[in-house]
Length: 443
Image 1: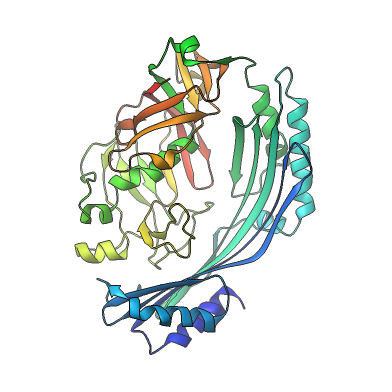
Image 2 (image 1 turned 120 degrees about the horizontal axis):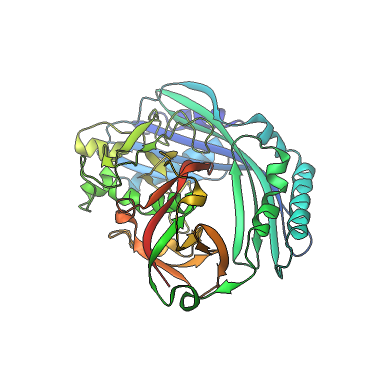
């Protein structure tokens, strides 16, 4: 049974028992190989199903989920949940505009790799071999290498219609000595060289020596920090969403006011859950609301708060198409409630090449450990640095000693105090962002 047929069968099975029904079905396959200084370990998973169901009955909302593509079991799960239904402002579910088979998030060549695990292993083997060849005088005691591909078919269905879409992706990465690493994600099939030379380019750029905060900065202090696009995206998704969601405002949490300056005047941030060539690209959000591009920030000024259907109904407006099942901690995606979340992000680049963004002593930080523990209410974070580099006039001169460095700052004020944005942007798979420099406390 395909996802659309399953969703239709579930809808028909609960017809009459509920006033309105919404079915989200995802079917996924993935394949890949990874190695940690040893044999190749395959990751081969096929026919993975997630079914998330919501039903309205007498103004109350019932939710259920299943990982089994059986219409009878899925319908029974929703019907069993009806006695536990909670009051809801939704009178009915979205009138989904029918979409037969949207492929804006899929690359057929990437999707086909899932059925060719031998090709993925060959890429992984070449990636590891070239990384080791390029290490030079750098001591590599542990090398983790991985390459993989995935594909997903998704259906959102209500009584009004169904929207079906597909997405796929390729990823590759290396991690050296457990602390420094490089990874990339592609939505379109890259040149083989882009995958196999990833680790070689990275390891060749790593300085041989390590430094502590005392040796490089004279101790903990504020310093210009170059944040990678991936780290910037993590900060935006984990923390900035807290100040941009209409649901947060309705719950009494502080949010940005429309018209408030929240970033440097050169920053325009666009959210587009329907972006083509993105892991997020789909014709609707998880509630069936049609997606589209929306400027969240324009020249540093907040232009909109984002909403799902519940928060929009409570506020007497319409959803912005940002209702997604975003899991927290150990939640499965199908079990997660619909929350307001960002889609594909795009930020305007600057006019300065990355190599010239900073002068004097600075840090380059690609990732932080434990960012999930940051204060979601205040935006404050204080996290250990992973894979950081010490810079002199933009040039890496040393690696940051593992366990000795942390970064402290506030995500909500970070964009206001930017010292620069690179003219280059990186496509992470779910965002297209520049490298940014901000003054943060390190040590």
